[in-house]
Image 1 (cartoon, rainbow, N blue to C red):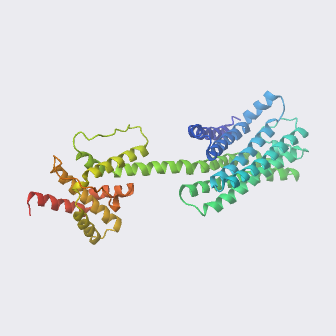
Image 2 (image 1 turned 30 degrees about the vertical axis):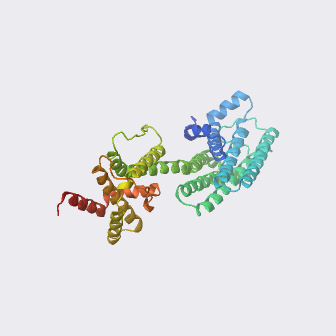
Image 3 (image 1 turned 180 degrees about the vertical axis):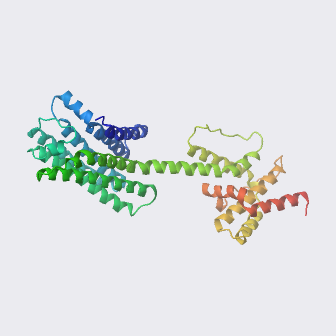
Length: 395
């Protein structure tokens, strides 16, 4: 009995907790983050203290046979409560209503914990049982009630989680829906754990030996259920973060063609801000957008609005939608301005009072379209070719 089937999920939850602790330290006032960390701590503790080697050691240290039983049952009840409280905070709503609902779950499961301790103290369990305490003492006064109470509390939480998460998952999408679906699966495993435990206890009451359901089948169900529930709660948080990172890097990369062309055409001595390679990608995107806007402002006197309008119409005629056509028009105008600026090294063109305020350049998404159009649009490429031929006098 090395307890690996308990210690492995406990270690997995501890690793997940280690990833969340830095965020907890930075923003410890966030109730959602506190709830996630509490769930991971209680989940890891449940498996650690439920492992037969730990049960035997706790009993030996305290000198009380089976003292681990109420300890594990109390931690399991607290874990069930933490799942429900996290779901309440995750779902959101008016702060006062969220707080009241959380306090109701806390009060209910606190009463369960007190009752579990009282029933154990009233009961008589002199024979140490490491794996089959539930069935061994299924007919013992007070111990019987303690066992039934913790199973009811655990099953109520499993049913509530299944119903609430399934109902919620039908109204949301993306990572949140995926996380809720995983939680539903975990709750079903937790419910199956309660059913098998109840079946074994009821069998004892009927004089039948179904102890294998409790000691062999139920523990793996609990392990899978707790892991799936924890993963389900963490998945939307981690998934959304990874998704945001991916979109930020994608935006950063797509802005590259426009940023490089503008940087290459910048006058000598133009100040630049260097960003560390290890800087957050969001900061790198912001800096790149800022550089682009600064360079566009410097090019404003060289913008040919007629060229933009011509390329816009040509793009529409080629089948582009309005956004793509506007981006192509702006890209052609930028390319033309870069050529005009290169032909005016001394900056003799008098700057107008206008700034770059085209409709397609009001946000980063439009800058991305302009950058893509510079590299990919055949209409922009054709406009560039015409301009080069015109400047060189080639027919």
